[in-house]
Length: 264
Figure 1 (cartoon, rainbow, N blue to C red):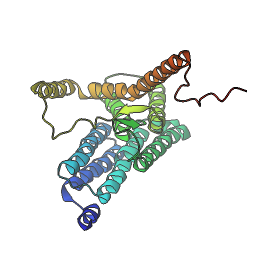
Figure 2: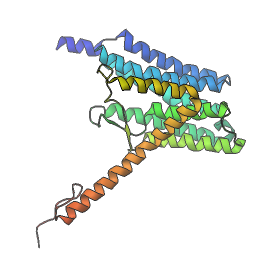
Figure 3: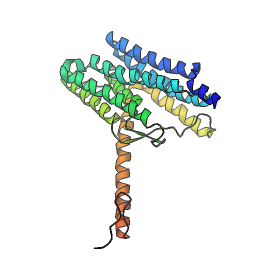
């Protein structure tokens, strides 16, 4: 028991080093956005995602999980995936919309804060296979990917159209984080588990695909992911309705309805 308490209170260097790198990348993104280097800022947010994906997995592999690490990771995520994307988007495009611009950025920041708070409160309750709401790193990638795509001149829009599309995307990302839509978590993939050879080939193919045009590919992938939760939710609703219809036809009460009372 003493060893377990000591482990929870301990501070481990390796996983927290990745968390610190995540925090630094988010801070660096804000600094670069203030300097007008928006492409570098967007890339820094994607690097923060890489570091964030490593700290938890490294902690589990090395059995160095701690309460300190969990809290530190949440605070770093709030900076890298909450404040940084909102400020980068505001400095790049939303600033020209006046109060609507900073309101959109604030909606995103509040969504990220509520998303992280809910995740920490429900960490032992929710389904491990799915996230409740769009994860904050994916929301940050959606915003940063849009900035990177536009700065890289992959599409050309008029100034007003570009600003309002940035407004809509920022608000959508903020609201999606606090939604109840189920988004696949990917936690079922364990790094320590042996995999077939074709999985390694698939990983190589993904790297080649992303490197062919990073702004387009990454933004496209995260757009699809940000919509996948709503598709999963619709499929679940449809499945529940079909089940309820079958039970009614069989004379039974659906799971979400109380059983019929005694006859009067």
